[in-house]
Length: 328
Ligand code: XMP
Image 1 (cartoon, rainbow, N blue to C red):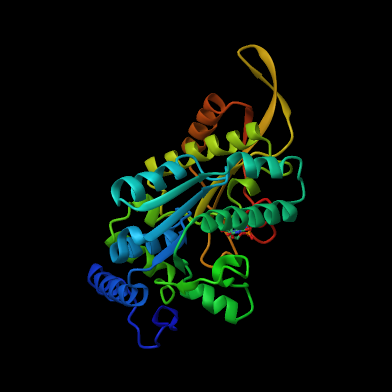
Image 2 (image 1 turned 90 degrees about the vertical axis):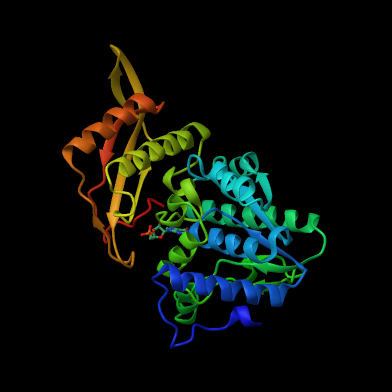
């Protein structure tokens, strides 16, 4: 299948709108030839790669692309709404939105082990997606947001690259991977050219298990909400201060312990909120982005005032190594 070719050694790096346009035209033609009038299924997370794949396929086959967006309750504030706004409302996509929040959070209740949490989230995701796929008739293809570094890493034995996303064996769809030969920066150029919004195209890396790894230990809904709200404030302030797109990754963590504080003359017993902001090129080694005192003071004030359950704000000054980026 033409979509599963390797990156040609002579391929020019896509850095300009013109090169992106040429790539889009070529892919639309290829997809039309391969898929014809058959249906294609895509798990659309709203991340850069799956969003660009969706936009390309919508351009090529319109409503014959069926996008499934699973809200597992661990997404950032506004993400599910943005997926619906961009793909359903603006691009008129055939989008199935699955609210699986209770299902995931019930399964995760009381689970403290980080690896078990990751496993539950991964398995549950596949189960939900497979259930939705079984409800549909006539799907022959599965689209995936595989990119060239995924192939290189899996060849080098660094990362297992799961074809067909770990779906049950009887669901043997043919694969469509229209950004397979692209590097991440090229995917962004193509995404911009396809008209996707900047905050989708230039989005910072976000782990598959989402906010679940930023709510260390057993996830509770109230602490998860504190992570989500404080993360939204941090992202808003980074955008306002020109740091969006400049700092590699920034987020908040709300650990599972409480300390004493005082608010409006009364004692509080609440969680701390940890801010982490880092820079890197390869995520093997990471340095800390030092924020201005003014910005830190402002973040402390806003998070304390606006996020229920938080009475302290801490800043993580630890590089990697020795600390990993995420807390779990
Ligand atoms: P660590 O914590 O390993 O993170 O230093 C390095 C980079 O990988 C991201 N990360 C993940 N991404 N699934 C993902 O898709 C995961 O389970 C996961 N854990 C960490 C992390 O956000 C950082 O960019």
